[in-house]
Image 1 (cartoon, rainbow, N blue to C red):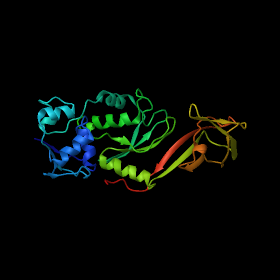
Image 2: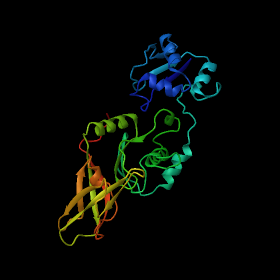
Image 3: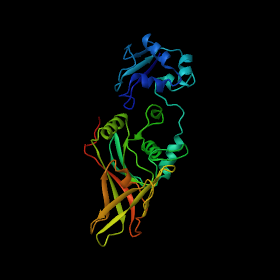
Image 4: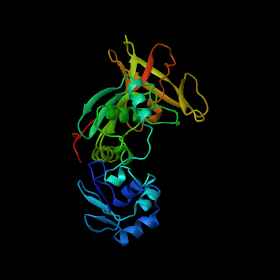
Length: 289
């Protein structure tokens, strides 16, 4: 018999989802059969699999060492799981530590035990686009490993992650969940629009007189890029941005104004360069859900 005590980053998820992470080589049929036969119990009782795990819940596995090794992917003798602790599958920890060490310009704006809010610099991916990419997500895990706020073993069952995304060439605020509770809470805030998102186009240099910048936005769908053109083209979207004297913010829009905030190219007039800068105004106080 093997016993597992649920920690804070396993609590809050369904039992069957946890079992798939703990025994990654076991199929649905086998897991539900073990639950029905009470070969897997939750707090000493029969479970169905749909229960939500709570902190300090106890799972017991009445398996042979050979069966446990077969479905966990770990050796039958001497493994951490056979000693009653939660161990992770093989992970590329070096990737996270390298990302934390090599990526610069990321400033922490707010942090508590569940949430982290950072300012992402332009030029950095929020999440990977290709397997070889290094993104803010890898930096986040490396940062938490360096601060001893998460262990390599815990990463097998919970991976801290960003909750909103910004384009590579866009700087701005990114919300990150350090714990499962924090990730669920921030994701709910974003999903239910209890945080407000603003996009700002900031002028490079000071405007000396009132000016209206106008032109056309052209999207290259093959490269997923938007450029500014001074001439009308097929499929181009016209825009007009009034800029008042003394201001350096050319445009500010809420979420969804894709065609107005995407380009970071120079204005058609060539007088003012502009870059997109996103900001999130947090309405709700970050708290543990």
